[in-house]
Amino acid sequence: MFAKGLRRLPVAEVFKEYARYYDLLYKDKDYVGEIAYIQNFIKKYNPSAKTVLNLGCGTGRHDACLQKMGYEVTGIDLSDTMLVEAKKRAIPGKLEFFQGDVRTVSLKKKFDVVVSLFHVMSYQTADADISAAFKTAAKHLKKGGIFIFDFWNGDGVLKDLPTVRVKRLKDDVMKIVRIAEPVIHRKRKVIDVNYQIIALNKKSGQYSEFYETHFMRYFFLPEIEQALSKTGFSLEHAGAWMSDNPISSAWYGLVLARRIVADE
Image (cartoon, rainbow, N blue to C red; front, side):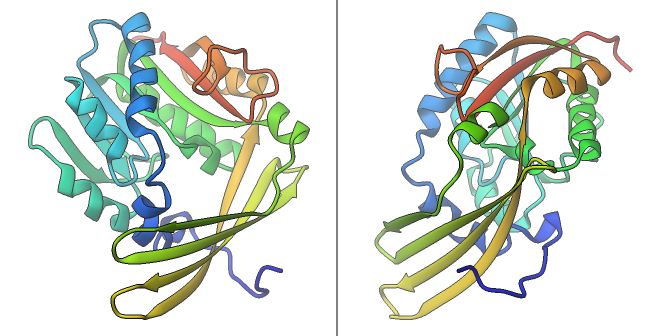
């Protein structure tokens, strides 16, 4: 069982320890393939796009892929630990990173495209949070610009409920075991993902262990569409993540929305 007595961390603290091992934990993630997939939507829905804002950039690996495809990219993340790694990839004027909350950040600049990937929107667990994040996307987009994001799809989650999962990874220095124990709260449409991380430094022989809980919300498409409409967007596309299939019972959904209101 997951350790008792753990406190609910503020959003700003969620990735403090987890971020130290983030790139190793997701070293098998296909960042290049995911950005090629996203680029297909950019080319179709906003072919003249040159600038991209990424809300919740993490360690900047998606951003680096976008920059290599020729876009000028700005990444925003709340975690200073994540940004330490992201800024190692920075290229002045082409690939830049800043600290900020996706619900409140204001760069005083507009972009052709806003993206938010790897379930950042599902970290917005309250209605006010998701509305604020959508407003952030809207105020940073030029009229006609597009907003692309993925999320946990309620139809998929409830059809295939989350289970305990164990992941083992290693590199030249570290060996890590991650145990994820989910607890679902159906009324709030939130899943507490309780992580236990056990890390071994193979060179020093030192072990470390810590716990974090990530609170993830699943959404149903009608509520996503309603929230987008209230923040100046029209829904242009919705489907299963990394697939041509309809969203239906997929666990992860992708939405593309267009900003339709006039510039502020």
